[in-house]
Image (cartoon, rainbow, N blue to C red; front, side):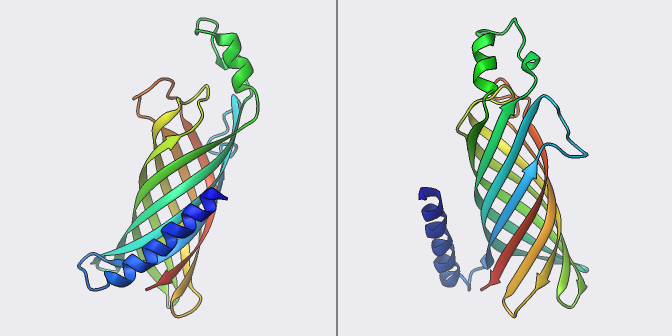
Length: 211
């Protein structure tokens, strides 16, 4: 409930800020919301050592950067929450030479819910296909924190990397629907140990409103 309230307040703040900054050089062009479901069990990343899937909720603020030939470029600011289910499947992933390895096996083998809180910056490239349809490629990097340790990643500061490909369809004059797929990775770039990280493949749907 607290997460939903925080997201609502951020969304309203983005809308109000956008209304006040329309005349600026770099101003908010659109605001939106995106939902993503992703799983590590797929044809790209089917690691049998653990189970991992995530539901991600993103607020979005789109800044128009410019165009080149037939391509348009946006910066997307995306505060987000990821709600994750994780469980260690292969207990032999924890080596006997690790400290307290039996306690770690007992801890990580239990199905648990974790959360990632992140602020992501996405760079989007868009190509118009039809009058109301466009192709969008987005590359994103987020600074994040994860609230629970696992056998693959330490608790605390981490990074989230995303690559998405999808379609935007303009439903009304100011409203656009987005449907896409994404590849994601979570790691801390070896700032802590362990740092095996997670790799996922997902689907996502979003809606945006032009200001």
